[in-house]
Amino acid sequence: MTPALLSAALLLLLLPGAPAANSNETPINILVSNSVTNAPNKTYSTFVVFRGILLGGMRRLQRENHAFRFTYTEDANYGPFLQSVNGLHGCPEQQTFWELRVKSANGTVITPDVGIGCYIPCANDTIILNFKKF
Ligand code: B12
Ligand SMILES: *[C@@H]1O[C@H](CO)[C@@H](O)[C@H](O)[C@H]1NC(C)=O
Ligand SMILES: *[C@@H]1O[C@H](CO)[C@@H](O)[C@H](O)[C@H]1NC(C)=O
Ligand SMILES: *[C@@H]1O[C@H](CO)[C@@H](O)[C@H](O)[C@H]1NC(C)=O
Image 1 (spheres, rainbow, N blue to C red):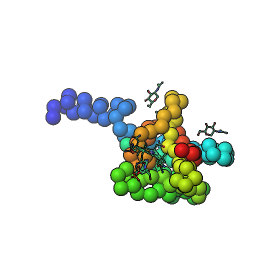
Image 2: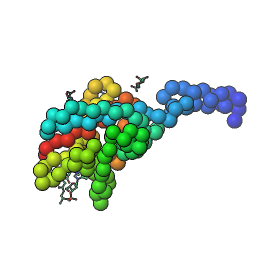
Image 3: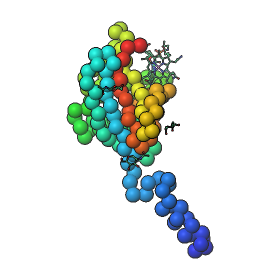
Image 4: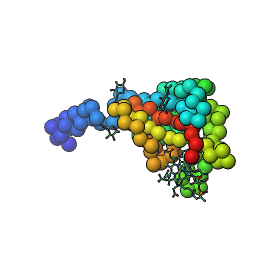
């Protein structure tokens, strides 16, 4: 490489927007809500690694904060299905489940069309795990 090309490459590495050079952490919040009982919301903070999946962030949070617990089952076609949060289980007989929603840093709320094993959070996403009826 010529010195000019080399410094151009170095500059690219230092530009913001390139994968964070100093930190591999994408911060997220996880909000647990219950639209069946209207129990008070709980919010937790954790992170995923660069382009890491939500499930990884949830595992990290569970490891580091024992107030947050969750379980999932493995669906043969779609992967991890979130079954319980903080001891409360979704139950097909009672038509309850844990819905996954995402409030972006800009305030937009979406309902992802993938589960916790496929969703890749963006920085400052608030992941909403909402217990609800279907
Ligand atoms: C019904 C349904 C549900 C019901 C299932 C409960 C029930 N007892 O009926 C409920 C409302 C719980 C549900 C929830 C969700 N669902 Co859904 N669901 C469907 C739907 C419309 C039909 C599934 C079905 O009955 N198949 C027939 C039966 C006989 O086959 P089965 O294998 O036993 O079906 C089971 C699985 O599909 C499983 N299941 C349903 N949804 C999901 C989602 C994920 C991520 C997983 C792992 C498993 C799973 O539950 C079914 C019943 O046990 C499909 C779309 C479709 N037309 O297939 C979407 C579908 C499977 N769901 C989808 C999604 C994204 C979700 C949610 C993540 C939505 C959200 N943002 O909250 C949540 C799951 C959150 C969690 N807890 O992990 C996507 C999955 C795509 C993907 N690659 O991840 C699909 C394909 C629809 C779509 N948007 O494209 N779902
Ligand atoms: C709890 O979170 C939900 C999002 O699922 C929100 O709609 C609701 O206003 C919140 N409730 C309170 C009391 O903050
Ligand atoms: C908000 O952010 C999301 C995710 O980054 C993006 O898809 C959406 O277009 C944004 N909406 C607005 C109104 O800026
Ligand atoms: C996320 O929040 C942090 C702390 O408030 C802020 O410094 C950063 O710019 C935010 N990033 C995005 C993409 O919103």
